[in-house]
Image 1: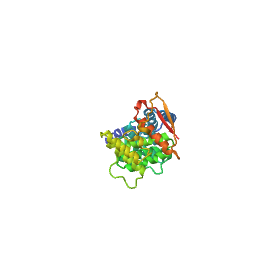
Image 2: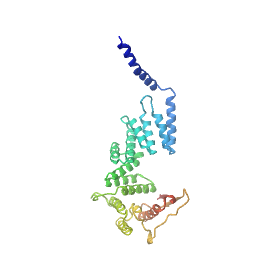
Image 3: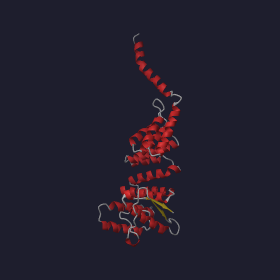
Image 4: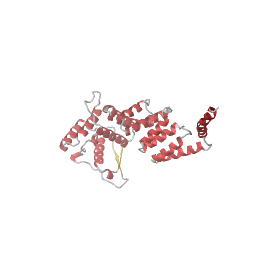
Length: 311
């Protein structure tokens, strides 16, 4: 007879937990409305660049009772935590949606995982995540995905593939200044992870120039300045008008041997260049753009005006 009361006493904590779980799952009628308002506020904060605050509100809105999460809102929280540089929190929220994300949410999950992996210096994991996204990639995300793929490819020694990913990204970017920024990102990636080994026979002349530029930049560290200048001059002769010209280890001289200058302006100053970057005058316009960009990158960051290139 004693075993019956004992069993009842043991069962009470479990029953209490079940009742508590049921109560938590039965949200008050106003809870969805409050969660929706919090998510709307989070979206406003995200657009304003307040990523950590947006992530906190998205996470708060994503909670759905006892151990239950809204996958979409958890992903948005992870995205904002990643934008705020809080990658451990981003990974924690990513785990709330794994296995349940479908369609667009699955694409968002993979892109966030790739971003986290790159931030944690794990480019192979980034590539694995990006491979789960079916191609062709959605237009609104393609530029971001191509940049991450290019960075990961170059970091893992797949330099030619990385150059091609950045080149494909450049073709998607409409504005000339956006394309120039894309070239800068490619040059930076090749400088951080210089190409090694022979250039593949399938590489185009433009691709070969990028790979040579990365190797040249790596060899310039601690090298004799005169030798660096000579190698840069030889590169320019082999690849005239190449978009990588502004990123050579030594600034490109302007006409007559002088380096063009970009005057420092007050905070918020904008310099606009209107140049022919296509058609018969494309070579001349590109040369002027390259010289100006070289001078801009040589200027102290604090004194650089905003540079916008139009055609």
